[in-house]
Image (tube, rainbow, N blue to C red; front, top):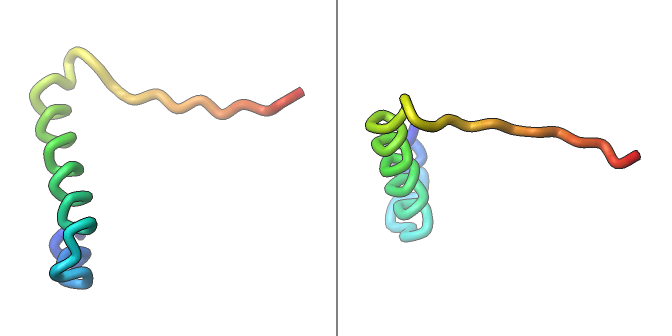
Length: 46
């Protein structure tokens, strides 16, 4: 998916940076997944 995205946005430095950071985040997660994770909270104003 990332390769296709990069092909569609060839030469776009912002797109390249986005994919680079996604890959970096995945690498960090793979290395430290025993220690952290992601949680999403959805709230409703009452």
